[in-house]
Every structure is written in C-alpha cells, then in structure tokens.
Length: 336
Image (tube, rainbow, N blue to C red):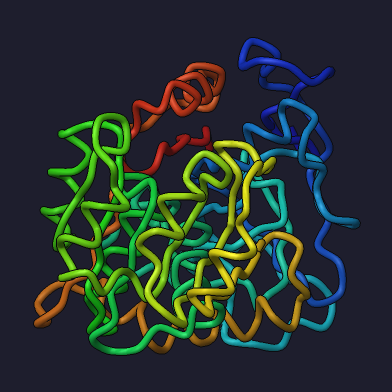
C-alpha cells in the first residue's frame, strides 16, 4: 500500500513472543537521507535488549528494531548529492529501523554491496563488521603481530573480528561455549580457542602465548570474565568492553590488578556515536576492508550467516539468538 510498510513491532517490553509484524507509515527521507527498500536485515544483541526495554534507541533514531539492512535505493532525500542513485544495491549501518520494508538512512552510512553478494549475506555485514573494525582499529589500536582475545568468537562480531585480525596481521584467539563454535572460529583463522564453560581461558591463553598474554581483549561479556581477563592481559594491554552479557557488577580488587598490568579498560558502543564518527568509520571500512569481500584475492573476507528467517517469524529468530545457538549472523528476509 502506498505510504505504508510492514515492520517488526512490539507493544510492551518482554520476551520474543511480544514481537509481531505491523503495518506502519513508510519513512520519508529527510535532508541528507536516502530511502532504502529493505530486502534483508540482521539481528544484534542490542535488538534483544531493546525488546526487553533495556536499551532505548538514540534520540532521533527509529523505534523499529534493526541496526543493519541490505536492499536497493528507493528515493533520495533533499540535499543528497553523492554517488547513490535509485536502484543501487546498498547495505546500511542504522541507528534503528532495519526490520521493516523501508528505512531512511543518512547517505554517509551506506556502502555498496560487493558484486555477486546476496542480500542476506550483505545484511550480515554493516553492524557486526563495522563494530569489529571499530573495536580493533579505532578503539583498540591493533598492531601487526599483536594477540587479540575475542570473546563470543562464533558470534557475528566475533567471526568478523577473527578475519579482520588476520587482515591486520594480528593473531586472533577466541572463547566460545561449545567445541563446534571453537572449530568454526578456527576455520576462519583463530589461532586457538578456549571453551569458557569447562576450562580456565585465562590460563589457556597464557599457555598459548608463552606467558605473554593478550595485547587486546574484545569483551562483550563483562563481569563473569573479569578475573580471567586480567590474568591473561599483557602488560600495557587494552581491554575493550562493548557488551555486558555476563553482567556489569564486579566484586573484587580489579583496580590493583589492572594497575599492576598498566592495563587500560576502554568502553565502546557504536549505536550512540555521532554522525561524523560513523561517517569516518564507514569510509575507512569501505576503503580498507570492503574490497577484500570480492573473491579471487589472496585474502577473502567472508560474512558468516547462521540462519535466515522470514520477517513474520521474527520471534523465532530472537529466541534462537537468546538461546545462544547461532554461529554467525541471524538474518531476516523482508517481503518486497
């Protein structure tokens, strides 16, 4: 229907069963924005938190779930004078609104879909890969030869970070909760993997690095891992926290241990960053990483899709992520 669209929606915070598909007004692109007809969108942990009422969108962002999408340019808003034209295949980093048939997005947050890539693969790239790229380069300041310990190594961000580490000449190691997930991480280039459920990953990381430890830790878990993180953090290491799946409340002498290591704790979120920061990030990723998604080169970056659900089954998709069953991204197909 003209001026309308289908979108994922929930009336009150709660579990996956609260989600359903609703007809809503189609967004109108504002100054500097592009209207994208969405063919596929992907899930992120932030979507689960928002659904539970624990993570409100930034001011001005769409209230609809979805932090990344892939599709085609449907219309250009006022003042858009750039490379994009109607019909171009694009993928987008979003503050929200991706789980819908249309989304309006600032032009500087668009990237071209690599030639030959499907919409479902493309939808798995923007939030996860830009997050991983940001954590490594903008926040963690990764250098060639450094060791990076990546928690949730089989997640969307984890599988991206493994490959981006290899691209940067760093050595990725991971933690995960099953042998299958660890094997998947190793297939993508992880030098070692540790099952946090049945082994001390702090000790194992030290053993694997000959008691040097990790120069950078990418941590989406938080409190439950803090002692082991500090145990295996190298002197002058950077502990980058970008999520708190294991709580944020720490009980213990973290500061003394951190001071002894001369370590840094850096907190980072992407969704709430400024437009200029996101523009710089998208530009850097497009120039430095996106070309490696093309096949045939010496290094080939591979988006990892765990499963694909139709939009009307979004509750099942959320439950799959909530159960920690996914290896890679969970993608939604949006009806055109």
